[in-house]
Image 1 (cartoon, one colour):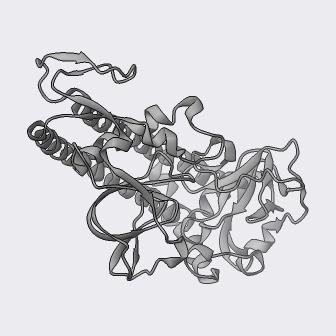
Image 2 (cartoon, helix red, strand yellow):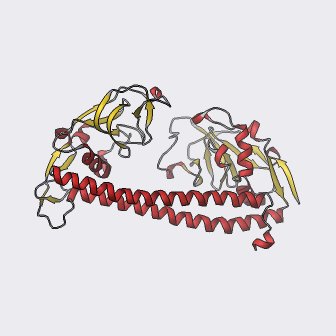
Image 3 (cartoon, one colour):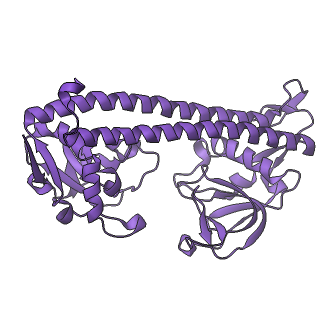
Length: 391
């Protein structure tokens, strides 16, 4: 027997807050569920200020995140603290239902209802419990809920294992791409060419006809004059901010061949752009231009491949994510001859394009698997799968 119930008959909101001191800060993640914030590469909130308070979470609680309107409500399997930016829910029904609810609250049936209650625009979208509590969910008998959870545990585990394999394949392709570029810009394309000591420990031996120069001698470095709020969604020109995503703007302050990278924030050592044309850029973005002895495209591949791994490794990177100008300007760059440089660029672009196409194809298959996972969950929790046939 299945009963349709409002969420506020299944959960109550945890409103009390406690000091974060000594409590693991948890964060809801679309891909990984509720996890320790310390385990995320990109930390949405440091929460290290004095007096910061959190909602005390315990296993089998649920969290309404800023992405719940499109990805559902996240199950929490940990003890810790949840930022008050999110909504912490605690079941008031038998906890044995939580295995079933973990799936039901990620079904398209629930997501479509959550989408009705979202407020705000773009990055400011929010879901409040006083509205979400009206969402309806099908709650079967406990034995039936247990059978559904057993079935979905088994079937989603198969899908998740396949997604994990494909994700690892993408990581290996990315590593291969990186290694290919690194070898090309430091060793060239001819394995039999005479070599010499580069004079740089981590660079090792390089082709005997190549040179090594510090970055400050081969290009000009400057920062932009714009701020993120200057972006215009339908702007005519590219606008480079401290992100790999390129914004747009209706003005330009540069018209040249250039390489750009983030000067501070989470994008330091990760964000690189190449352009030849008109554009504008953020006040904390470094622009390299007026290249001498090397062309901009070769410089772009070299910097993208080696800078973060070498210059920002260990003590060269401060506790605050910021790019120190002396470290940047003193970074050594290999200088091949013009003809060889052109051959290296052509080789990199050809091989990288092949790998990028394979990565894109694999990413597409992962997205299809995730869609299938959501569809399977939705079908199961809405009674469209006969578990006798499934067994």
